Length: 190
Image 1 (tube, helix red, strand yellow):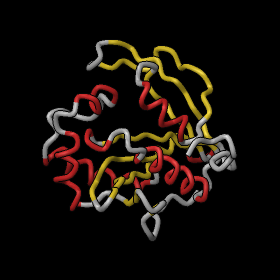
Image 2 (tube, one colour):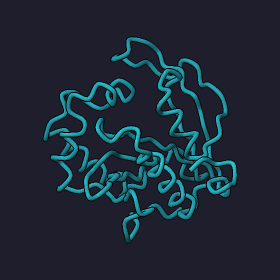
Image 3 (cartoon, helix red, strand yellow):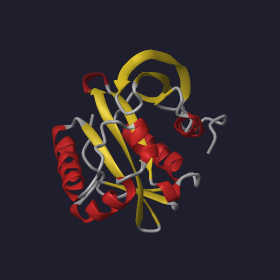
């Protein structure tokens, strides 16, 4: 699999995906710091989220691209960072990735992340991915809707998959998948 950053940003004319850079630090802090919706479901994102955390993320993102462990993208609309989307390569030898995402509070409900997930999935399949999976907490209905709108197929529930200290409970993950050729099938919602 070729998981190098794309030579040009990925775009569908509404959203653009590009690797994170040092110029995104302030946008990351504004988007994530204090946003309970993001950190409720993504408990590994620290709070408070300030400049040191954002700089650490940008540095980690560069390292993950270089190491081939993950492919992380800033999601922009009209030139502004509205979220993040990326693929963790959970089984690179067998071309399997796990896609994740978040969206800034004031950008929710506009379809940006669904578009971003579709762009990232298309890029991953071109790079040689043979299976993308997506996991969302069973109570995170908005994230499940993104998966469905992006064309992912619900496979089932991974029970008691991980403990989330912010929620004070173990999380059940609804598991979705997408295979090459399914992204543009007629029944997929745009």
